[in-house]
Amino acid sequence: MSASLILIIFIVLLVLMFLKVPVFISILGASLLYFFFNHGVSPVIFAQKAISGTEGISLLAIPFFVFLGALMNYSGVSGRIYDFAGTLTGRMRGGLAQVNVLVSTLMGGLSGSNLADAAMDAKMLVPQMERKGFSKAFSSVVTAASAMITPLIPPGIAMIIYGSIANVSIGRLFVSGIGVGLFLCLALMILVAVLSRLRDYKPIRTTRLTGREILRTTKPAILPLCIPLIIIGAIRAGIVTPTEAGSAAVVLAILLGIYYKELNWENFKKAACETVTSTSSILLIISAATVFSWVLTKERIPQQIADWLLLSIHNKYLFLLIVNIFLIIVGMFVEGNASMIILVPLLAPIAAKFGINEIHFAMMFIFNGAIGALSPPMGTLMFVTCGITKCPTKDFIKEAVPFYILLVVILLMLTYIPFLTTGLVDLVY
Image 1: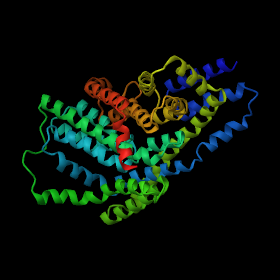
Image 2 (image 1 turned 45 degrees about the vertical axis):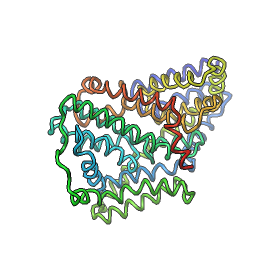
Image 3 (image 1 turned 135 degrees about the vertical axis):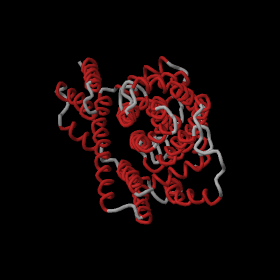
Image 4 (image 1 turned 60 degrees about the vertical axis):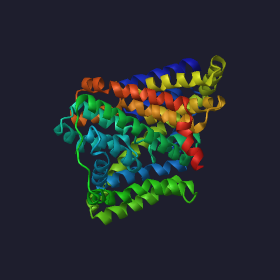
């Protein structure tokens, strides 16, 4: 009975997601079947687990970092970051496309949301890129692909959620994310330069900037760029927890907005409303997935899968390859945070039994989720970007092929060269 019921639950979950029912409703609906048909389990547990799933102390960091990103967008920071990125990449081949990639890297440490980053760049940069001769499809793909950097650069929400679920140090994940995010940024900038040369996309300028011009764009960006450094440094020094760092960063963002004279009461209210909406959607998914995870644990699904894998696979490198293939397929259909909450309790213990470093496995997992957000048929980054730029999906997918190839190569490098994910952590800690 239990095996057939679990199978039915998974089928119902997949069907609801394919029908585009909201993720948290899909998970709760599938989980509710277990309590409805399994009379040996009290329905009270359903409510208890749904509530307790959102009560983790580390989850308090999420609204603070979401609020930080929203405040940055309304306090004049974004425009200053754009100008600074243009200064750094203006003479590079494919100038505005390079700005797009660099802005996502710099704003990743401030927004924490890949969808917010993609939406912002799609509105502000893509029209400028088209006026400079870039195709709509290329501009859209660069925008969506560069937004993948955001969940990797601290304070990425994905790292907070993973650390909360798997009981992994969020501070160490933040440090690892810096190295992985910068590596992806460099790889995307090289690919953009190659494609721009092949298509004769011009740089923004061909002359050197004077020292005064460089200072004019760099000086306003210094304070915002210090915020991620302050967050990481304070956590590493043990002065604050990630939650306390988030609250302190919010205070700094408010002070910046006041200093720039661009954060008024109306913008503050808009940022607060966006924070409530975004945080609510994240916590609803976490709440639903907590119930689902309890059902799987109650039926010993993780233990059975772990036993089967350990008996069938004796090589950790083969295990990592299979996990990558599985996560890429799942990521094509399931939103990243939802799949993380469901699958991390299944896969992280197995990885530990194979002796795989927890930070290494975490960053590999998060990177897979980032690829899934860009991939058809249900990639959220793809749909958000195309929805704003009005780029046909088929044109986007065709243009994205070189980027997909690059991302798979990077994923394999992160998987089989642990230094890329753990080297910076070992150095700092």
